[in-house]
Amino acid sequence: EPEVTQTPSHQVTQMGQEVILRCVPISNHLYFYWYRQILGQKVEFLVSFYNNEISEKSEIFDDQFSVERPDGSNFTLKIRSTKLEDSAMYFCASSLDRGHQPQHFGDGTRLSIL
Amino acid sequence: ELKVEQNPLFLSMQEGKNYTIYCNYSTTSDRLYWYRQDPGKSLESLFVLLSNGAVKQEGRLMASLDTKARLSTLHITAAVHDLSATYFCAVVPGANNLFFGTGTRLTVIP
Image (tube, rainbow over all chains, first blue to last red):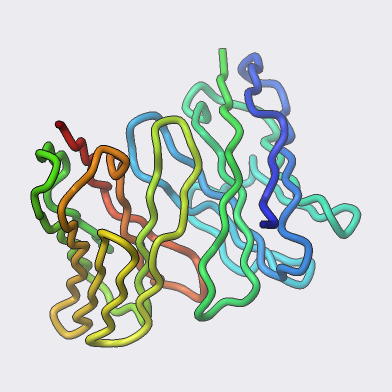
């Protein structure tokens, strides 16, 4: 069964450094998302992306965050200057449409900021 | 403020027993999702509920949706150890972003 893949599985970064998290969505999906989950807490929406532009973003997704689909297969999340509170599990998801189909999640990238 | 509250937050139940997890939400949403998360793992889609009165069943799990009451339930029948996980409901307050509930951590004990 097709799946969403994310790399790396674990990223350790010094505070203030830039980090790029990578995702390969399911190939025929059109809608892409990033979510994060701070340890032990619920999953929070960051941003959705369709047709090469951001569709929606949450309050968490401030100017330090950006997303890109550089080559038609990868979907990346960049955090420009990481903070300690950015430590979380980041999940990429994709969906075929924005209606009846569920969003399919990757295994996540655990981001640890030191 | 949008709220999606699940009840209970923690559930320990014996194998073979039945129980229901509740998901209350404070905004209108034309659909509701249930996901399962094993420790340290990703989220697995269980159910998509699309209309008032919708009921879906898969194995020992059955989900229902009452949009008027803004309530969804996830019923577990004759629990087995493999069902131990955290279960999240999620609504759609915007175009397509999921707003997740607080989660219910289920532990099934022999």
